[in-house]
Structure formats: C-alpha cells, structure tokens
Length: 358
Image (tube, rainbow, N blue to C red; front, side, top):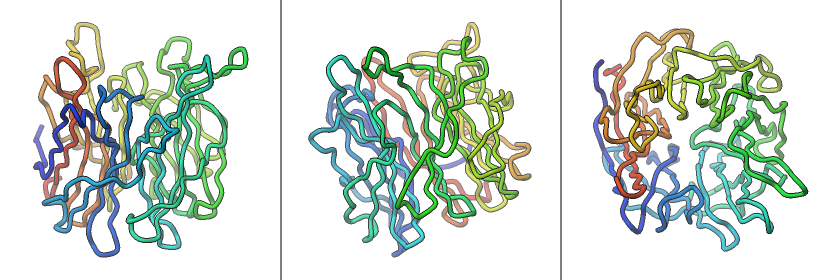
C-alpha cells in the first residue's frame, strides 16, 4: 500500500499539555482555516482530567499554523470540555457542538451533556453554551461527527453510557446508539430515534460506541459504530435519521475497538480507520491496537472501497480520532498520536494530502 500525506503540524504533548486532539476544521469567511480541538491542562490526559477547547489558525491552506489559543474555557463547575464539531449555520454563524463533563451527585460517577454554542464573529467569541441533551447521564459524542443533511437537518450521533440504579446514575461501558437533531438552525434540539443496541449485546462489552454518520448522494444515511466484535457495525436510514436498520457487521471495516470517520468529498467517499482487529496472538501494546492508520477511498458513493492508502504505520505508536477538511485540491487530516511508555502523551498531528495522490 502507498503511504500518502505530509506533516504540516505536530503539537507535541508534554507535562503541561499531556493530550491534544479530537478536533475539527472549518473555513472562515476571510479564507483562513480554524482547527478546534480539546487541549488538556496537566494531569495524565485522562478522559476526566481538566481540558478546554483550543484553536489554531492557518492563513496559507494548512502549510503553517498559529500558536494555540483558547476558544472556550472550561467553566468552574465542569470537569472538562471535549470533542468539538464545527458547522456553518444557515444564518452564517459558526456552530460548535461539544461535550461538557461535570461531577455527579454523591454516589454517582462523572456525568456529561452535549453543548451547543454559536459564534457570529468567526470564532472570536461564543454564546453561552446551551445544554441540548436536557437530561442527566453520561453520553459520548466524537469530534467532527456532526453533519448537516441535504434537507437542512443538523444531525448529532451519540451513544448512551449510563443507567439509573437505586436513584443514582451509573456509568456503563456497553452503550447504545442514538441521534439528536435540529430542524431550525440550532434553535431547538431533540432525540429523533430510538436507542439502538448491538444485536449481540450479551456477547459484546462495548455495545455500539462512537457512532459516526454520512449521507450518500441518494439521501440515504449510513452510520458506523465502534465495537469489540472485530469490525465496525453499520446501520442505514432512509428517513433522515428517524429510524434505522438493525446494526450489522461490515467486515470490510475490520478494526479494533476504535472509531472510524467517513466523509463524502466531491465524488469520493473517504474512510479513515485502524484496519487490524485485536485477533488472538496479536501484539497490541498499550495503545489498544490503534495502528496502522489508513484511508480507504470509494469512487461509487461508498458502496465499495477499491483503494487503501497508509497514513501511519509505526507499530510502537497509536493513531486515532481523525478529522477531515476539504481544501479544494487537497485534504487536511488531523488526529492524535498516542505515545509515551510510562504515561499517556497524546500529540496532535495534521497532515496534508493532495487529491492527486488518491
């Protein structure tokens, strides 16, 4: 397989900033590119350590980047802010969807919710974040997973990871797939479908996790979910996300328990994922088998993926949580690089791929 892309940025993790990544991109009105991502401050870079939403900008099509700055700072009552997605709103604003984690009540685990904020000045300032989930619990949304459908609906895939026992909310690892949506440019939000479980949930520790969605040219939606059952599980919707087929294994997208991102760009559908599942005897190291990191390319609207390219293949590192930006004649891909032997150190890397390479 051919290796593609060249590095244009590497935000090295260190003691003060042990984890950066899980980001997204948007083109600003002045032509520059904004990359938003979660930036952890100290700790071990654990999912429950302190983090803000940071940003960097490029004015030369991703060739160079500014120093990081804070877009949205964690409030005092929050544990952290994570996993941003940026979208252009109908009225010209920029919308940001992200997770806000916060301490639960006594006897409860850390809880979280989904937040929506908007900017009318190209990311210079942001409205107060609105809780669009509207319930107590623990859910997961991932970076760059929010899409705007052809009918204008904003769709957010999320996964439920909690249940109530004896009046207390408890975290559960095995999760279910669901979708939030707005049909009025972010003014109101609601869950538009049932909660969907792994069809063999009793044999799966993960259930359906870190779901993503893309829309075919026909209007049909395809969702893919991370599982621990050797591949991504696929479900489709023909009514803009209101109902979904029973999730089924897509064995082409074999993978360990790590998420995949699929994006339609021009006449191509791009899928970025870790392709090797954690089979018996595989040496997975401490990074859960998240190497190599590949891009599969479809030229028939996602029905088949005839070309596969290597983005990363170091067996001693891990790569995950990609975001994709369409620059016209090029593509930017950002992701975090898991490194460090004694503790988590997750650096943020951006590569640039010319479409002529595909």
